[in-house]
Length: 207
Image 1 (cartoon, rainbow, N blue to C red):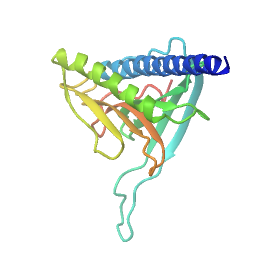
Image 2 (tube, rainbow, N blue to C red):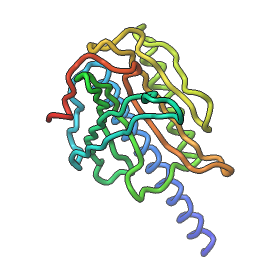
Image 3 (cartoon, rainbow, N blue to C red):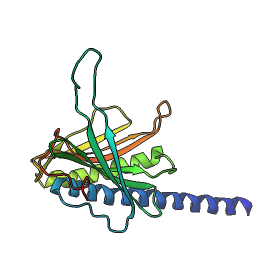
């Protein structure tokens, strides 16, 4: 009787774990789509149902080198708008990197929320499979092309808009995950304008 009861409990635990993983994948795919569409179309991010965590402004200092009298790369302002998904392990960070010429480069990132558990190897497999499904559907439209990040992590997958977005930039969207035991756990999903700067005046810098 005890063995029978234990078997039932183990099966329930497995079913609950599977449902949780599927929910994680569904939430990730929804956020990935929202980020991708916002950056590809140049429109506002759809934050429906998300909790607004406000703005954060920081300055990135110039990149310098010893003996070089001028900066290799200029400093710039980064403005981030953050949201969290209630009841989920994910958070969204939209960022604009503004140049001193009034131009900007936009990105929309999905991160693990603060204190959230790292992505497990099984969850990585599910997220990878979800990305393949999403990418195949996008490629069928003829408006996208293969583009994968450098193979630095256990998962390195991406896709790129074949043309340019309304701001004149190429847009890449990717999923990077690291779950191997010999490396530090890592999770990063991003949709970003790929060029150095884009045309529009930043929106988040002067909301």
